[in-house]
Amino acid sequence: MAYWLLKSEPGTWSWGDQVAAGTTEWDGVRNHQAKNNLAAMRPGDRAFFYHSIHGTEIVGIVEVVGEAHPDSTDETGKWLAVDVRAVKPLQRPVSIKAIKTEPRLAEMVLSKNSRLSVQPVEEAEWRLICEMGHTDPD
Image (tube, rainbow, N blue to C red):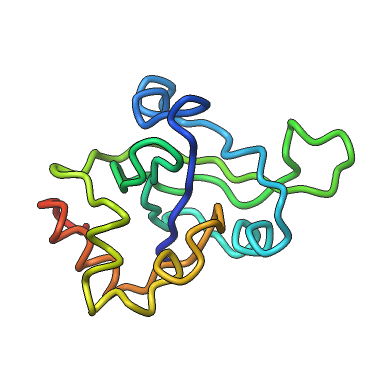
């Protein structure tokens, strides 16, 4: 299993929207590095759901339930999406500030490139953030 982080502006698609919708297509990604990360995802992988712009915090966990496929919102056919389902919220959201001030997360992609919308998360980072969020990592 691999771990990831997916960013969404809560005004566009929030954790509450994801929970209410159940399984959805994670679409609208228009960055080549993020596209490559989507292509690497496999069913069963887990991802943090991160509210960007407003809130700037990890608020939940989703599971990848379908491999990368053409993004239904892309008329060019160049971009990919994956299907995800809500698993659980973090008991305590973990802010970008808390992540950036935690020395053990200094090498995390989010600490170094907070603009990338789909990014990998190392297992040790996953476990630490779940601990910070008072949430079981499994």
